[in-house]
Structures are given as structure tokens and as C-alpha cells.
Image (cartoon, rainbow, N blue to C red; front, side, top):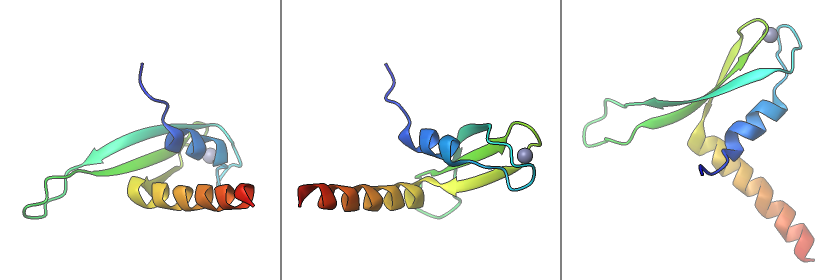
Amino acid sequence: MAKQDVVADNLQKAFVCPKCRCKDAQVRRLFVNSAGFLNFMPVIFYSVTCTLCGYTEFYDELAYKKQTEQAAEKIRAVQEI
Ligand SMILES: [Zn+2]
């Protein structure tokens, strides 16, 4: 069974469309091949699309995960005290 995608889950939960205020979104994981020399790693983006009007936001997976891990560490630090 595939591991649950926490990033996609968080993005979907946090989404509020700035255009129409709809809270229903579809999240997709996109692999983009970079053209950089000796760099064969694809860049991974998440797109969050409003299901009502189609407005779409993009998130860089690395940056988003870093930010959520830092937030999780802060919560852990508080709980340890
Ligand atoms: Zn919308």
C-alpha cells in the first residue's frame, strides 16, 4: 500500500481559493525535468487547483517539506518540556 502523501493532504486541507473562496481543491504531484547539466533530478511541484473556478497554486516540494518539518520540530520541542 502506498504511503499517504502528507504534503498533498496538508495542501488540500489548507486551501481556500482567493478568487471564489471555495475550499474544495484537487492536488497533483508534478515532476519537472530540469535542463541543468549533470542535474538529472526532477524538480517536484505540487499544484493545488480549485475545483470550482480552476485557480491553481504551485508549491515546490522541497521548500514545502522543509517548512512543515521545522514546524513539526517546534511542536515536538514544546511537547518534550
Ligand atoms: Zn476558485
